[in-house]
Every structure is written in structure tokens, then in C-alpha cells.
Amino acid sequence: MVTTARTETSRRKFLAAAGLTFAGACVAPKSLFAEEDHLVKDALREAPAAKIRVQALRRNVSVLLGPGGNIAVLTGPDGKLVVDAEIVTARPNVSAALAGVSKDPIRQLINTHWHFDHAGGNAWLHEAGASILAQENTRKHLSKDTWVEGWHYTFPAMPAGALPSTVFGEDYTLHANNSTLLMKHYLPAHTDSDIDVHFLEADILHVGDTFWNRNYPFIDYSTGGSIDGQIRAAEANLAKVTDKMLVIPGHGEVGGKADLILFRDVLAGIRDKVAALKKQGKSLQEVIAAKPGAQTDQEWGNGFMNPARFLGLVYQGV
Ligand SMILES: [Zn+2]
Image 1 (spheres, rainbow, N blue to C red):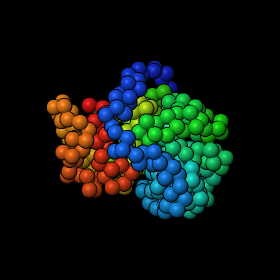
Image 2 (tube, protein in one colour):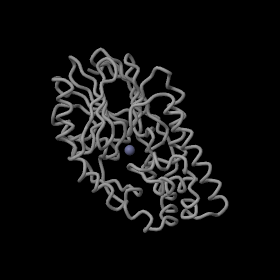
Image 3 (tube, rainbow, N blue to C red):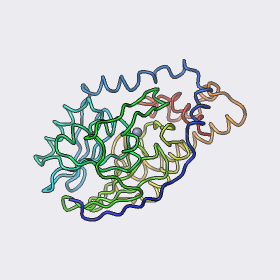
């Protein structure tokens, strides 16, 4: 299935997020974010009952929209290729949805990054026949116990079969089902393991959690993410997107260039307001009370991330 590959091993240095994380924890009273303590457990418990919608996009590419990260599916004679693996407990519905898309066996899985709502199904998809491909930091984080401060949760190391068997540094090209897939690693953004996947002929770009369509993003400072990195990735997506391109976000509806512009503008606008307030000496509680995201809070803050949690992540990084 893989006919060409190019891997660069240059390792990017970035400041360890540990110091920032500690500072954030000091200014964020436990009571404000008590829900973080059970957020992952709730997601695991609720995923089995969550419906999954299947949306045909272009050519032989579809998307599954469910409780976790959006899954892209490429069908054809080489077998199914899927981008992302959902929350592990969503398996019955994901499995049924995939079977409904085509009869092709599952052959290849690509992880956009290491998070549990995108790589959680790695083990069962591998058992079902998929080879797993990802950026090297995805394998690194999945290989050992990993603490995520923003979720107050330690993810245990995944078993060997769930780990990507092929990893790359900066970019990778794969040919399958008469399609060319171009993958590129972002500079540290939502995590340090984010990649995009461009289905070249269909002109569809899966950008993982560098884009949440009309939702405030979670940002994982514990594994290299930051608000400024998240905005930088939004800029990188804008530099790549064309008017005709379909863009699959990590969360939210499939969108396009206008949605990416809106996402960048909302994030940059809130970031600048929070930075100005913090510079004035305002506490996180005061920043939340000032409602810097008033225009979008109602629409963007009613899903996985409420406005206060998002502001806590922005405050931490400015
Ligand atoms: Zn994520």
C-alpha cells in the first residue's frame, strides 16, 4: 500500500510545558475545574450510546461524526483506510458504521495525534487488520503512562498492538485506493504530535484537533500544546486551504476556508483580550467574569469545552 515515504528525523526543540502547567495549576482554583476530574471517565462511559453519522464527501472519501474525533474513511480495492480511531468504547457503533460504508476489509489506520478520542480504538482496529501510521510523538506518548493536566488524567501505556508500527518525523506520502495521501507534522499546536492528512485527488484535508469547527478547542499543554501553537496551526491551515477544499476538523462539522478563518479569528481575538487582561494583573476568575468570548460563548462553549475551561487554557499560555 505504501509506495513512497520520506522521513526527516530533525527533532524540534520546544520548551517543556511543565513550568507553564504548574503556573496554570496555581492560578486555577480546583473548584473552577472540578469537572476535569471526571471528563475522560464521562466520555468513556457515554461514548457507547452516542450516535455516529456517516457523511459521504467526495470520490471514495466519507466521514464518521461521533462522540470523539471525526474519522475519515477511504474505500477501495486496497481495503479501507481510516484516519483516527475514536474513543475505545465507541467501538460497536464505529464498527457498524464502517461496515456500512463498504465491504472492504480495514487495512490502514492513521492517527492525527495521540489523544484518547482519536487513538482510543487503535487496538481493536489493529486486530481487525489495520496497520497503524502516525507521527513519532504519537507513538512516544502512547507507549508510556502519560499525564494530561487539562484532564487531570493519566492515560496508561497502550499494548504493543495499539502502537503505530510506522512513524515519521515531518512528512509522509502514502498511495492507496487510487489516491495520494500527503501527511505533514505541525509545529507544536494542540499537542506535539499533530499531523494533517491531505486526500489529494478528492481535495479533502483532515486537520485533526488543530481545528474545532464552531467549538472552543481543548489544548494539551502537558504534551506540547499551547494557545499560541494552536493559533499558529490555524494560520498554517489557512495557508494551505483553497476555496474548493473540504476540511475535516477534529470536532464539529466538515467545513471549509471560511470556517478556518472564523476559527483563527475567534482564537486570536480571545487570546489578545485575555493577554491584555492578564497584563493588567487580572486573575483568571476576573478574566472569566469579563467574558472575552461573549460573542461566541453560547455557540462554541456548549460542547466538550465550556467558556471557563477554554479561558483557563488561554490564560495559562499568555
Ligand atoms: Zn486532541
